[in-house]
Amino acid sequence: MNHALSSDQVALYEDVGYLSPIPVFSGLEVQTLRDQFERFESAHGQKSAGLRTDLHLLERWAWDVVVDPRVVDRVVSLLGENVLLWSMNWFIKDAGDGKFVSLHQDANYWGLEPHDVVTAWIALSDASPETGPMAFLPGSHRGELYGHENTYAEGNLLSRGQVSTARVRDEDTSLAPLAAGQMSLHHVRILHGSGPNVSQDRRIGMVLRYCATHVRQTKGSDTAVLVSGEDAYGHFDLLRKPQVDNGECERQVHLDAVERMGKIIMAD
Ligand SMILES: O=C(O)CCC(=O)C(=O)O
Image (spheres, helix red, strand yellow):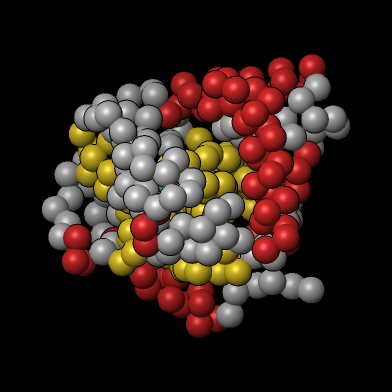
């Protein structure tokens, strides 16, 4: 079965810069994914926050999500047949922890050019309005790329607490709540952020960044995974599925990929 987006969905994405909500995983599937993730967290304790970036290179269940046709077919509808998974991040807000994400545009600091880059944000727990789901400024992906200030503000989940210099009124943004098992797709240039989680549960976002194979990394050498079609460009070192979970070889590949990405993100 093909899970391509309809032409109306593609047109809407092109107009507003995001699509939400899109059902992906059943209740049972998403509970299993959450259990696997929380087992990984318990096994690694505090170190899990560092290890979870690009978890698809360490754990096979996470790899299976990044290549799942229910995710990839939708991304292919937006980026074309030849697609790479560039990275996996986690945006987690524990109940009442005060964490938030300031308004920003991803395109500013990932080094990826051109901007044929889509994020699939998959909810492993409910991202209801009380949990601080993402809010987007519709259409802003078609506007300018604003500057950012690095605030390093406490509680900001962004690596440097980046805040866009764009002046945006809350009432002009659209909230994108998700039920567990649903995902949203957003454009790398769209202005977005999120507020604190005042619910009783964690808000767990498994966040996958995809790009077309013609996209280049302008800030250094980088890795990716081919998830659809073929890579005729060779701009990234392509990585394979882990053979075992958390094996010695897998740990080395993962460490190298995450170190390279860290240099890129913190480059300026
Ligand atoms: O999870 C959030 O609230 C923000 C996520 C985000 O900024 C992103 O996925 O680009």
